[in-house]
Image (cartoon, rainbow, N blue to C red):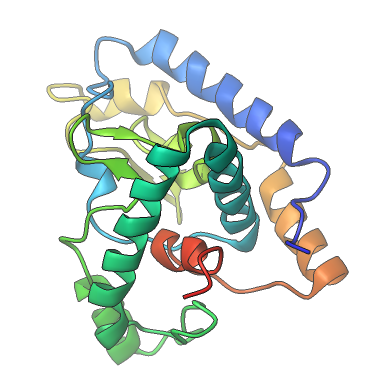
Length: 208
């Protein structure tokens, strides 16, 4: 039986989505994010196991609602996994990334698959085929956000804004650190741990 996301995952999504809506209301004139803008969908990035479960559930639901679109995702996932596997910085069987913070490993990760398009992206429309199930990082990328003690945002956003203007519009998507708690809860209850990437998270649902 597929792993289930923690019961409070919908609560996390609601909190993050509310913060995102607030950020768009306050930063509307500075944000370039809109359907068809998919720069942030190019290049791999790490996601946690709660994200991975949510994506797989989203694909399973889509297979019931729109099997043709789901089939296209499956084909893109297969192709992406084939391209990514030779240099994958982790275990291609489990899809888990190496837990290695050495300089060499960090450099490999920084240089890895920066031109790889997310397999969930519809290449014709430039929109996400699993939008409602997307990882938290996908929901929060764009607006000004503090990460590792540094305020960052998409390079297409806040063009012409001063540092002070950007700082005043900082987004707080998960103030109570619920995502961290859910990742820990999942690990403690199921043993599922470690980070992966979207292609390998969905590979697990395809019996590749």
